[in-house]
Length: 297
Image (cartoon, rainbow, N blue to C red; front, side, top):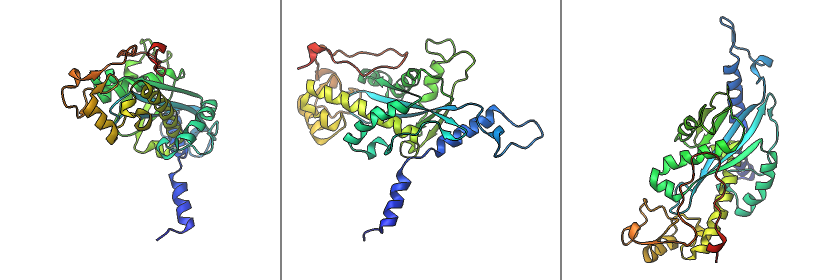
């Protein structure tokens, strides 16, 4: 039976991300930074409970974790939360990237970049995923994204339930090449399942990461068209797995994964001239990998 129009509209509204989590975190941060004097109740509803300055919250989300080929990408989208909420509104229609069409995601990228306090992407290559494992590679990519923001976040809000942020932040502590400015504590890390669906900053990060990774997989498809990466973006579609079975793995495949190869992945790998495997450095944001002209068809 078709649901009443009012019920359907209510579900649509419920699925849209809000600022509720970011505002709650900012207020809690303000309370921790300015606790009530000993023996006095905590302030409520007055200026003492509001942030003394805007709180910088970096929403973080990853794309490509479950793919068979290509990099994993982490997006970071920093916003300022003041006493009246976010200092800049986000464009209409921001959602978890998976809930948007490719055209809508691409249309949002420019407006999102314009209103962000800061934004960045961190990449981890297939070689790094093979060498370190997916969680460690996610930590590398997340650290690169957060360092690439160029601003010191007070709070990092990440989608999911696996804390890959804290190890990355520890590696960027005071004294490291990309350490936080003197006197600024490392940000507190907050995980939330479905944050990309529910939280505006994380949804924005998911859009930026998804569009960048998809574009990179389209570029790689031109070099290895048999795997269908322009369409499947490196995930395990039936056509992709069949190409792996008949043609073997490509240098962009995660060869430590179960790819369903007929023989050892190391003995059955198609290389692309001019696109060697590279272990990217641990410091700073990594830009979208460039494909050399000599390797392009």
